[in-house]
Image (cartoon, rainbow, N blue to C red; front, side, top):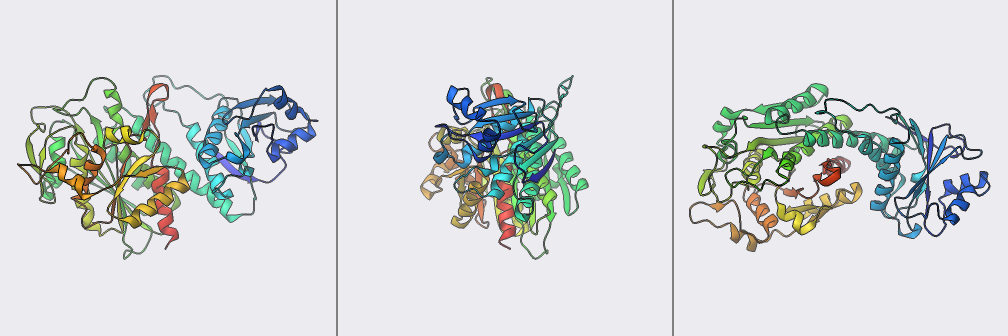
Length: 496
């Protein structure tokens, strides 16, 4: 898709469709009012007749509106004018662009940036429009025998805004890059486990390094992992015929003396639970257990596109978790790269076993910050539902930086405590720690486990189990938290 700014009146733009907002209580947005005026009150009459009430997400498509150059006008409900939020604005953008994608419109003029949204300037609203365009354009067809052609794909998007503003043009550039990263993460997440193996993930990382300057890919194989002493990570891989990989992507956009920001993504390409086998229902969704890795790789694509002035390292420990004669057994004791020993009480708590060695490995970079991203605990879904990712950290400063990036990107997080009292639940009679802390506070004790390997790091943990994918009729990876991670890194660049 091609995106550009246009400050023309909505009735003068020659496109397939113009999108304007309609509020509840018979209120029209400025662009809707302009179209209403030249059509002798046609839109006002539709609203009074109840054809559209203005409720958030409602749509009504008009054809050949009088005196309007565009072939169609899409009215989209925006709710109550004084109650419009950033979250609702995202919903409005997604709804309208999804509708346009199915309405045989190849070009569209979007007037939603004129809506007043508390906390959102024009730059952020433009970014949301472009990100929504990418998100609603994505379709997964890689494993289908017949591809469904789009008869009239959306090709050109004009956004109502000041064409001379550097900030507005930057918004399009940023959102394009984030959209590419999100959709790469979605594609990797949606691929089945027999295709998206650790080897496949490694190849995708190498491809990014081949495609972009300032990106270097390094893939560590099993023998190298053994030499590093990654006994915890390797113990999870023992039950699989797929070889484990430690995938490393390094982006160099600043002087070598600038400490890098490190992203660590959990890359379990399929999680059966191992010997502690999961229930069969919805086990197919365990192909999504590598969405942390997918989001980290997607973020690196975004960074590669934008080429910001900072250094970033992505580390992805990747393997499968399957039952086998060699697989971890409950009661086994393994030794991590840090030298700490772990009693494996539940083989389905494997994500922390691979992450802990990756976190120890990250110390070699003397990082400015480390954020790990993982579909780590079902307990996080119970605690927070499907809206925010869980956030836990050993640094108040890092927490505030992540919260700020979450607010800007609308990729939400919610902080949970990391108190030492919870750490008591990880005690073991046979090792330095157990890999689970019991039923209570499962998300927190999982983070407490990881915290034991981050004492030298400024570190945060994002539990994305609730936000990484959707189930049901809309089943599929969401690409979160690529927007959050991308914004966090852009903010670091802006801070110098």
